[in-house]
Image (cartoon, rainbow, N blue to C red):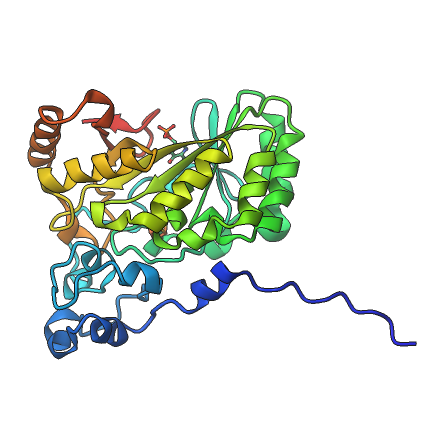
Length: 334
Ligand SMILES: *Cc1c(COP(=O)(O)O)cnc(C)c1O
Ligand code: SF4
């Protein structure tokens, strides 16, 4: 008799879409009718951080517009190759804050778990372009160590899954981790920092909703959208599903030159987020990572933008303008 082999797990639809992401800059430019400008738009050398963008996110970009605010977040640019003083590899001091394998414990009561190094989209301004994920993720065989660290410190009431993008893990893998967390009596909240519901809303599938709804912890999902064009009907539907599963939804954005350093764009972002059931949480000043200097907005202008927002919107739609400073006890308001 032939022993029955376990069936290989079916790839989920979101996983297929993930794999079909655009990774060739020329293909992206072709899709957007910009390929004739490739010479001007693309860097001449290797940036060390490959392009990656899900097709659904690319479809929200305007054809023929090299200044599209979504395109500018993902397209490798020549400016990344220059060395700019003050812009470094570990801008937020993460390498000094490791507490255990894959755990960053910088702030009181909250510990952040680097659940995975992968992301569905590669954002050019991200600190992750330099982070040594291969050594630092808590995933796979090293969850045990991370969970032990959380169990041993009763001051930790909230666990933040971050990365990379923690929703790049399969739902069964998340379930395995959350089952271990739910066993720890002092952990009351699970927070998930993710861009996936924005760049690949198909990730919020039935399997995922069921897992989230059944989770015996308070749940917070912090999304990451920078521009109102990122939030279309399918993203709004994913948000509705997350809320129906019991999650409180917040958004963090990064203030980015030419992407959203504009009061109309920021106001529209807050309005669209709220229409989708999401409250703006943080507006981050850029982390000064090497290769991202061309996205920086100076503090005076950042403050003026937020003042202008405050004059236009209800207080609950104005995000807190913050900066991450290595060694500080929290994100610092400007
Ligand atoms: C940003 C961050 C948090 C969360 O900070 P909040 O102000 O609670 O959103 C927690 N841990 C680390 C290591 C962080 O970088
Ligand atoms: S960690 Fe977030 S901001 Fe950075 S590349 Fe991944 S999705 Fe983009």
